[in-house]
Every structure is written in C-alpha cells, then in structure tokens.
Image (cartoon, rainbow, N blue to C red; front, side):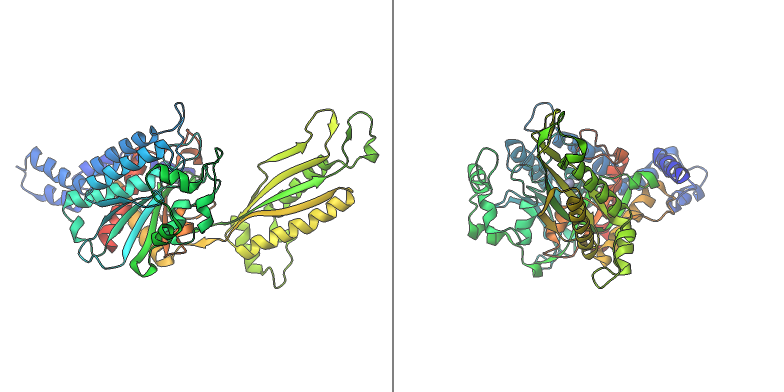
Length: 492
Ligand SMILES: [Zn+2]
C-alpha cells in the first residue's frame, strides 16, 4: 500500500515531466522524429497542444479558485455555513449561475431554489444527462463538500465550449446545484433533489426552522412561489432524463490510502437511526448500595458495547435462516458500520445515579435485509440485558432509508472516464480505478427514484470532511474535471 501511494504521488507531483519529455507520448515522439532543426518554439507549441486538451487553466486553476471563492460565501463571519435559502446560499446560487452562463449554459432557478444550467446540444428533445451536487453546507464546513461536484461539472462544460464542441453534444446536458442536501436548517435532507425526483412530500413546505419560518415562507421571501402545484411541476419526467452523474469528495480515507485521486461508487449505504431509552431507579450516589442499584447508565454502556460487537462480527451473531442468508452476512461484513454519537443521562449530575439514559444508534450497510437483521439481533439482546439489570428499555426507529446501488453500466463508463483522465495526467497509469461504497448519503440517493445514477469520488486529505480541515489537492480537482470532460466527450 505504502509503495503504491508513493508511486502515484510521485507521478502527480511531477506530471509535467512526461508531458515535456519528447519520448513519452506519440505526438511528442513525432516531434522528436522531425528534422534536427526543429526549433524550441516548435516543441513548445507541441507541448501547448497536448496541455491544451487537458485544460489546466479551466479544470484546475479556475476551478480551484472558484471553490475557494464559494468557500468564502458564508452566513457566518469566522466559518463556512450556508443553509437552505439563507442569504449566503442565495448569493452562492447567483455566483454559480454566472459561472454556468460563462460555460455557455442556459440558466434558471426553480421553485425550490435549485440552480439549473442546461445546454441542448444537437438533439434538444433527447433524454438529458443530469450532473449535480449540493450548494448548501453543514455548520463550520469545508470548501469541497457539494461545491466540488458543481464546480467540476461547470468546468468540464466550459472546456467543451472553449474547445468548440459544446453545441455538438448528442443529447442535452444539465448541471443542477441542489439547494439542500445537508438538511441543517429544516432537519430534513434532500429538499432540493427530492423535489426534482418527485419524492418530496407536500408536507415539506410546512417544515419549520428554529425561528419558526417554514420552507414555503423562506422561499417566498426570495420571490419563489412554492405552492403544492409548483412543487409537483418540479418533478422531472423520467422519460426526459438519460441518467444522473455526481462528483463528490470521498469524505473517507480509502482513496488516500490506496494512492488514487479518483474512485467510482458502487452504491450508497442504507441507514437506520434509532433512539434507545433506558429507565432505571434514580438515587443518591453515596447511599444506594451497589447490589441494590438499577442503574440505566451502566445498562446503556453494556448495550453500546453489545452494538459494537454485533457490528464488528455480524457473522458471530446473526442466525442463518430465511431472514438472513449467508450472502447477506458476507456482504454485511464489508459495509456495516454502527455508531452511538449522542448520549444524554438525566438528571446528569456527578452525585446522582441517573434515572434515565437516552442514546442514538446510527446503523449503515449496503445490504438492507442484513441491516434489518442487525437491528433485530441488537434489539432482542438489548431486552435480555435490560431484564437482567432490572431496567426498562425502549427502542424507537427515527429514520430509515434503503441502500441505493449505482447503475453498473453508467459506473463502468464513469470508471473508464476516470481512468482516461488519470492516464492523460500521468501518462503512465496502469492501476485500476478503485470501486468504493459510500457510507454517506448523497443527492444521487434521491435522484435514483427518477433515473439511473453513478458517482465519482475524489480523494480528500486524511479522509476529513464536514470540517474546515477538508482539503482536496489542486491536481485532484483537475482530475475530477478531466474525468467529467472525458465522460462527456465519450458518451454524450
Ligand atoms: Zn455532500
């Protein structure tokens, strides 16, 4: 692993050498075989034409500068925060719209605040390729989550415009910057993409934020008339759409570990959120003997360790019957992750045995049936532990979303586009582009209800995301734009 990481890093740091070396590409070889009197300027123009097809000015330099520009568009002074239809989100939308127009796209903003840029190409009535990601952020966010997918798609289309081939696309291509994916303001994810996919319930218009303002009111303040009728009109006709592609930072450490700038996503994990409430006997920390306690805190601790054991070794726990096949357990082992991220005791004082402890459980896996089996196993063992400790336990399901598999054919096309982009940059890439699972949710999940979806992941430093420390190398931004460009040139 260490070796391959080092090799690929070297290739990237010194990508310029293969380009300048006259023996490392066929066109440069042609230059070498020309007469000995070939001038330096002749070689230079050869190099220019090679680097021209790589569009470093657009796909790397301008894209990186736009990512940093967008990263400064914030509702907070000292950190990045852009939530659904906030003043900063509206400003970001205008900026993205200007960039879309600069790329030669026809633009509009829909009733849910999504920003669209479209080019019709040679066949305006053909099924369109959608490429998108989200323009909203978490609180104290990084510059790349969401923005990278929007900026790299616009950059690739701009490269086509500059190259003179934008109008020759065989089908329409539309970039969509979705207004809400993170769900920070209204505690509901995918408001933007779910509207386009036609799966946003009418009740979403009445979701309210901390100040009591509803989604509908917030849109109206920005002159967007969000009525139920308008909401229904936002849904795209599945017959008008060819597919959906999304570029996103990996938000995990795998690509960095294997030393590859890009990967292709096989599927997005399904997710269940549970709330577990454990009730015992509240009492004085100094007077109740250990043998007479019904302490919900210790019970909660045992339950959390149980969860870890079940999720680390599902094969040791799950029974092989009709509900959990051998293959389910095998596929579970690779993708199952379980987290207790929040715990609150009551009354939460150092000299009181708590009366109640509530904690959350987040379970994700690629295999929906396997995920259900884990929940079943955890809950039945939970009741045994609670009985033994004479505390009462209750489990509530707060959120449930099935896994989404990316389209195999679209994924193969994205994978070969990523491969050709990396080979163009390094001139010597033989490694396979990795195929990854996504543990995080993405707009592609919502859009999968409308059309086939595919995703490219981009390496990020330390696997860090949802943090100002989030970072993507300039050359990896370039690789992402080049992969989208290669995909458009080959398949559109
Ligand atoms: Zn994201």
